[in-house]
Image 1 (cartoon, helix red, strand yellow):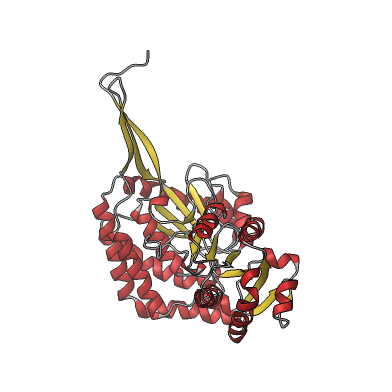
Image 2 (cartoon, helix red, strand yellow):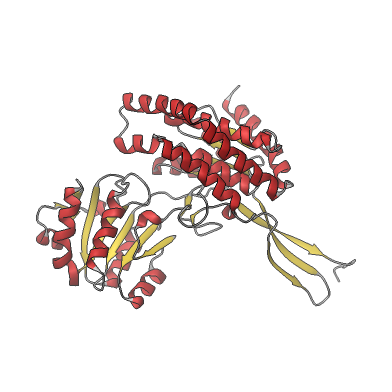
Length: 418
């Protein structure tokens, strides 16, 4: 079967399942989610065996340590997937919620009600846990989902999906709710992105090249973020010890992910006191520092930063460092060079925090907290299907509610238009 027909066959099955899901009950979908969690827990050995095939192949292929870290499924990671599905099940059902309602002067009732999007395709790389997170959030929001993971995680993704299909089937929701593409060629992605009338939304997660390729070829709506060039700004009124802890966590806790810090901005008022100490700790953690001239005068061991460093998403133990003249220059730098993903300020000044939160044009703004906390689970969403830096429909970590749209329900008593 050629690629277009293959994708159409999958999307047609998903479209049929979406119709069934749209009229399913929240209790039925929650039961399916809990059954999915139980199925994942019952298959730990099989999931780890499948994952080891992927990890071994990735090591042989010479993938970077950061990529292998994203790929690996430890027992704690498998339990985390199951627990996330249970958290999603415990949330309020977003489907059917009344967003607003009014009774017009002529007696007409106008209601805005939350409904599923329909068929959602998710394109992703490396992380097998996305299979469970995306499928779980789509199920909660009564959407059928089509998942296309990267070739480096194909065994893991198929094993997780098979466990979840067992759970979905036990709840009586039938086939087609969760479909995993078993082809890894890029033509499949293009065909999904052009499946007008069958796929309602596509969400690409992965490197910038993948996301731009999806956007450039898509004829259906896309929700995405291109890069995660995240900043931590240490304000003049920062608690220095807190600032050190936040910087180290934001950069070092897991450098290969999109909410890791890539640039450190330090107010000139505290740069002399703050930079030597934090630089020593970062260097001890094997972080390469690339600084502006003022930073390098304080810490000469830094490499010289070039213009491209301010825009860079390193996804590695590298950090750009710049001394700024104050709050407004920090805001200006972030809005000019950042990716509108997640940016943080460390300060004891309420006024400075409010100004930063208002003026920084990012999906998530952190005050006295690490950028690594920009996450659907942390925000109480149970998990996330992706992070959006768009401004229409969804922004930031996307949970089940972000996978719904709305319809107008208008009720009359024989009303006619004059």
